[in-house]
Length: 87
Image 1 (tube, rainbow, N blue to C red):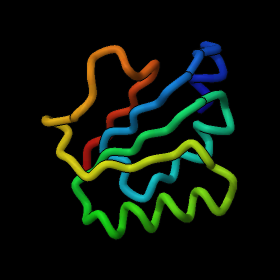
Image 2 (cartoon, rainbow, N blue to C red; image 1 turned 30 degrees about the vertical axis):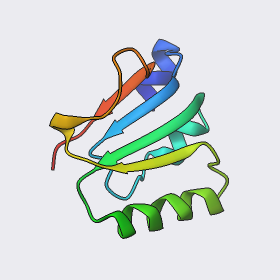
Image 3 (cartoon, rainbow, N blue to C red; image 1 turned 45 degrees about the vertical axis):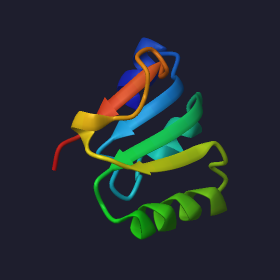
């Protein structure tokens, strides 16, 4: 987040590949992201649990997709910012 603030990066729509429990989603949305999409291979019920927890603390534009990083179902150019993490 410090890097984004220093560079004044416009986030717009964010794709978070390897989102896990979405610890950064709240920070991203509160720092200019207009939409957050988390992608991970963890079970769908866990992803939805984390999504719902983020919605409870005020992150409204958040969605999750259970898919591998190699087969993301999105068109090129849909997201203004992409965060990729490996575990």
